[in-house]
Length: 306
Image (cartoon, rainbow, N blue to C red; front, top):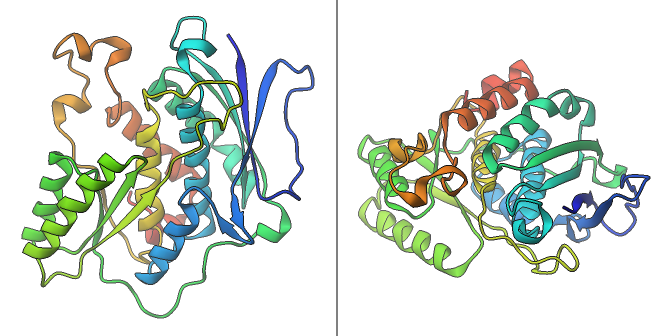
């Protein structure tokens, strides 16, 4: 087994190094900056897209997406076949620069337990302060309040499409939230969204589309991993991130087939580690607990789905 640490950095001048002193980990630098103060891996584009919709997430909500990007990068770029003893369970540490590292350190055990259950790995999460030039990244809100009444995850599959139709038939105005990292998934999402727009032309509903993928050689000398067990944490994080900018109470909807969510062993592809825990109640409840423990009371009232 090879232990890995993925360390987030804000540009070349951010030289903080929290690799283990004993050198028993393979360290990977994960630079979050595309240019100047624009974030890479679709995060900066998501901020700009939300701003164009008058949606302004907080710095703490941005921290959540940055944390999820670290998890998704490690999950998809560290091979289970070569980096674990049992061809599944990896040991991964991530070091995440955030706006308020004291607040995030307090909820670390909740996050680690959720990720361990979700992906079947052993996660260690560490938070540190962002460098001063990046202490504030999220755009400040203007006076225009967006029209969206709720947030609904939108994968391009049948479950999320039905969820969107239910919202629109009930005359609600959802902000749909999508993630894609490959063209086929993106194309399905685009097609479903375009059909909804054509059919419900009178509704001002919109979609946040986040394209997040990583170079194949992000972790040097290690093959990529395609099981993507941690993707639902990114999906939930993007939903909470968008909702945090609505400036009113909202519900984050995750339309899903109930039997799939409960991991019922339907066939040999739904047994043990082969069965995804994407929306398992343990994952959903831990995410709620994690967010509740992280946000302040005012943020919980006006920026979170719980």
